Image 1 (cartoon, rainbow, N blue to C red):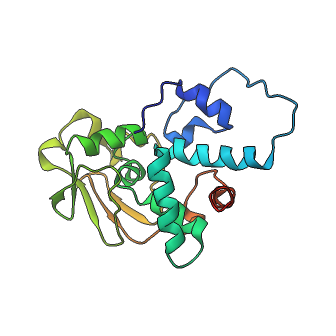
Image 2: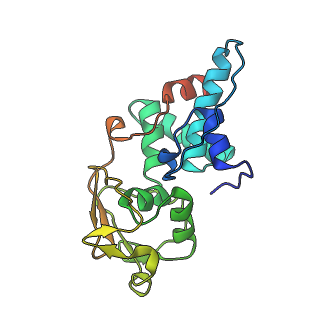
Amino acid sequence: MAVNRVPVLKRCRSLGLEPTYLGIDKKSTRELKRSSRKVSEYGLQLREKQKAKFIYGVLEKPFRNYYEKADRMPGMTGENLMQLLELRLDNVIFRLGFARTRREARQIVDHKFVLVNGKRVNIPSYEVKAGDKIEIKESKKSSPRFKAENGILAATSGRAVPEWLEADAEKLEGTVKEVPARAAIDVPVDEMQIIELYSK
């Protein structure tokens, strides 16, 4: 993931974001002291973009590339953008419950633990498609980080696998059943603000 030296909880506070969206089961006891000054329209748009970049761990240049690709695709640009971010391989590993956080999921992909349709893929931004089979490499399935008890992965900590994915906790395998609709993407980002920001 993009390296950001700011502590995660502090960054979450500044963006008004719950750490659980990053897979972090912690809560800061500090309260953010906000200025009483009204936030401008640009400020609101910028904050939504920063939230999306922070959640998915994407830097500015690749994020803009996602926007440009989404804009060329048929349909709503905002929905296309969110779908492209969700279909990143590191995000899918996180969603399947094979990693506690998206940052850990990126590390798992970087370390060549992941196979897509039987082929090793070590690019976190790799775009998966409907019908793709994702699995952890056989030699790594015995790793304690993937230890499943009663069919529940250690990494999931009660997190539900979204409906557009199908996961087998025992075999450490998953399938992308379909491209997720926007309603199935549970991140608190107003993508229309991002589109307005980039389309100026």
